[in-house]
Length: 234
Length: 234
Image (cartoon, rainbow over all chains, first blue to last red; front, side):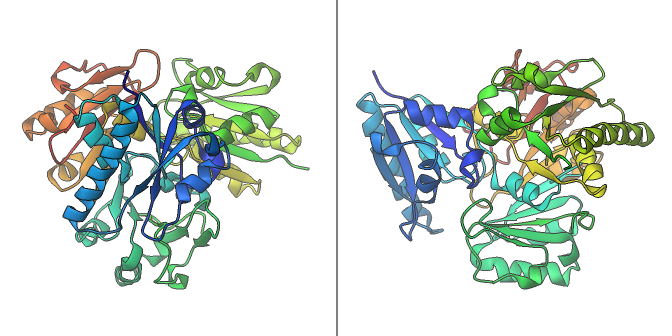
């Protein structure tokens, strides 16, 4: 019988933010699919390895190039889906671990969809997002009462329009654009309403209540929260 | 010595979506603060009781009236903060459980802020949101690549404006407005891009891939997802 794929959110970094379901699936599965970025770092693996013994499991590295070239990405997704499907065909249960939640800007979703489209059984298992973890770290809410919450990839071209409108905003994955995002917040007079956490729950975590202090070469794992009202906890 | 307050997200309903941290804190704490709505239901307690023994703990019921009357709400929050602070003054560690995550439309945040403002040590512990759980249940993402994600309380007056703009939308807590929200999605031709999950992960869960089938008297715990593109999994 074919195995089943579980694409599992492992939370933002703190191994204690794994869910009971993630831990159970990791214990029960035959193989773990592990994302690997361009720099070779295995961030997701290092988190999971703190709460479960991966050495007993078959391990499949899934290489995801950091690129916006759709053809390169499509090839990487197809290769990953083929590798996962080979394990499923061998009757193995596969847990594909992903930082945060598989439903929020996760690369695993593309592979998950290919595997599903190919007729395999597959389930998404939600996790704690870095968005929630960052707000919690700052001691504030993302949204209250009738406040909208707008989550934007920092590199999204139309960020400006949203920044001028109502709601609290979260800027994700600003990466190399982070200096530009900060400058735009300054121009719009929004710096007093903004804070940032870099590598929330990971080694080297940094909290910035003043974005003037950030390093424009800041980590890929940075999340900026911009509130409609000034921060109550700053 | 004064105790510490932990406002802890317990996830959307499935007890397996509690985090390891939530379970540890529930085991270690002296007292559990439990939200109670108008109908007397103790939804959060019934979830937590499936993974940890609450009978060994002091239990504090926190009554939260379902109202938009700010004066009534403010009184309820103050009363809850006073009750929590009495436990903290007695040196007790208190875990205040909340459905989903304390950072996303949670009533516990108001009590948490009052307790913090009164000088007590307090920590927010993020959980899996119903938003992520609903997308996972539908087998789809909330946002991919450069898609914005816009989270709106369904009763928010300016929902219309957002529905006309870019991004995927999540409509939360539509409650008694759910029929009106559905009608608006129909008028805008968005029903083909929408799906809903009622009581995700709770007893009586229902998935609606066609919103024409929903009961306008649907549960308070309903989340509608409206995607920019048609659903790939419908």
